[in-house]
Length: 250
Image 1 (cartoon, helix red, strand yellow):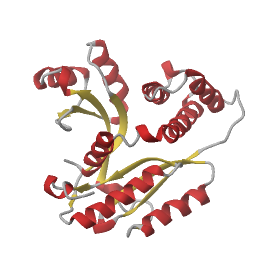
Image 2 (tube, one colour):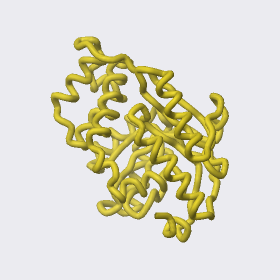
Image 3 (tube, rainbow, N blue to C red):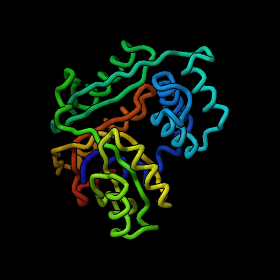
Image 4 (cartoon, rainbow, N blue to C red):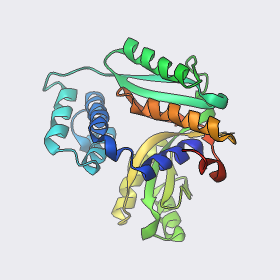
């Protein structure tokens, strides 16, 4: 299983995001604001905003918070202006790492991201140093408990998807071209398929296997520290940890 997926599954199982609800809200509100600024405040005509609103609602964010974020994005309310910044670098064991941020202060964010890389045995690289190791895809997660593999595969292909991956024990991962994500998602929903989450993501084309529990733990701590930074929206990496090694990581 690709490292970024395994790591996110670990995080979901440990319910760490639930323990940091306020921080999650901050990240979601930034995404809503930027999506509205770039594509307008009507989710019917702004797929990125529609996905961001759906994520916020699933996180039980109050509707008034969502509406204020949209208005800040469209300029109806005053607010902070965020810019999108992407960092690339290497973690322990030479693992590739991409960090996507939304920030109102690029210098502050650069310093913080660089500090996290350095503290955990990694190093920040130049733009493009690891991006070629990933491909951008639309990904739709569907709960396995409700559908059999044959049904999901058939529905996904009919909806315009590229492939269906057995993501983990709990989900099917339906992959699409990035520009087709929203159309495929809507087609599946019209067929009555329950969507747990949908997003544009980066899939590693090659992975680094980590067989040392101490090095695995060091890498996971670095990725956690990046995720917990207020300016960081998404983190991608191309590692793989065997199950027997993961069991030894505290």
